[in-house]
Length: 292
Ligand SMILES: Cc1ncc(COP(=O)(O)O)c(C=O)c1O
Image 1 (tube, rainbow, N blue to C red):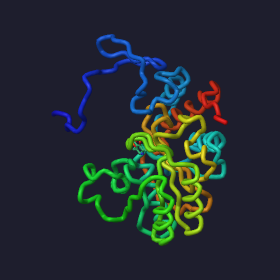
Image 2 (spheres, rainbow, N blue to C red):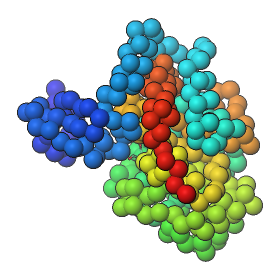
Image 3 (cartoon, rainbow, N blue to C red):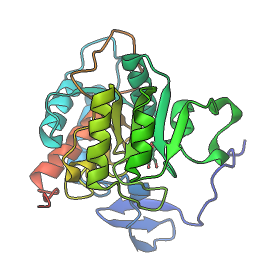
Image 4 (cartoon, rainbow, N blue to C red):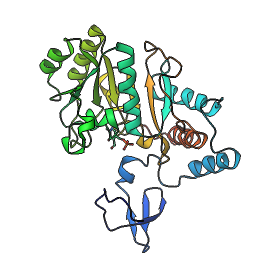
């Protein structure tokens, strides 16, 4: 069997990593500034990460979300403290796209509305709803083109006002910093205006911090430089230093109902131990230097 050939590949095969260094199969050493697509948050094979996952896998690698898992509760507590949203609730899944999928779905459940407002050039992932909110027709199948998403230019307060005031939108979804688009930052005044419009119209504000979160900008989430609070924040990539994991944190105004979201693997024991090790290293090594 061959691989389904969807990735244009660089001719390099990393086989070993340590901190910010990487070695390929020929023993060539690299300074890794790519970080496996902005995923490696505390360095390759950090001893704390290796120890915590190894110990956990020797105890219990996985069970199910239908029983108690105190690692999830511990992670929720630690994340709440460090990320500045201690009163929000945590839902765990397996990837960035899945985090956004759940965020969009939850916004629609909460508001009873169908439409989503997104930004030109946005990238939110490749699952059904996330790809529909991604401004790239080349990666949308007909199945994903349901006219539920309207795209407007970044930092255009007038366009945002016109759309959000229709009260037709379940959510506005914005990347903390647009990554795939080529690094475009929503301005402080823009985010504040959108926050205000969302509050006035009962629209859910989703901040996608999958690429820009987890301390990359000197605050835990990039949008915190603008002093706004999101209703839902999605995260993944750096959350577990390469172990597949995604998450959303949800405002206390959005109420959970049993069964409305769910996953088999999300928040499993190994993912939680990896995620806890990342927060431990961020704290112990003072990795987030809060920018003034
Ligand atoms: C801003 C943003 N959202 C969502 C995603 C999708 O994440 P994943 O590839 O883990 O599904 C990405 C991935 O690059 C991203 O950069």
